[in-house]
Length: 126
Image 1: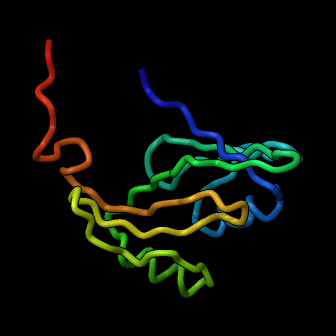
Image 2: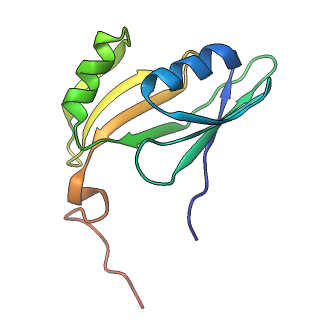
């Protein structure tokens, strides 16, 4: 199997769409209640769904960049505000954290080999 997409709930489609376009994603579907984007690298996509009323999303979406530090600096220059600057984590990933206009947590990170092959990776049983 291959993961197709993740859909995030949003409070305002126009604010959310502008946020993700400015992050560098390409919009491929645009409706008043649903938007879909392709990532700048690879074939992954994600979408936004307009939610009515109160909602709370506990999911965290991770977008990997091999040039994390430079990307964060570029985004700060565009006016993005980060909850956390790029920080080395105990699990060997470097992460920066920001939130979209609906409060969804977005982690921009760099993991390199440790993304799929951390030192504590389990032995795959055949």
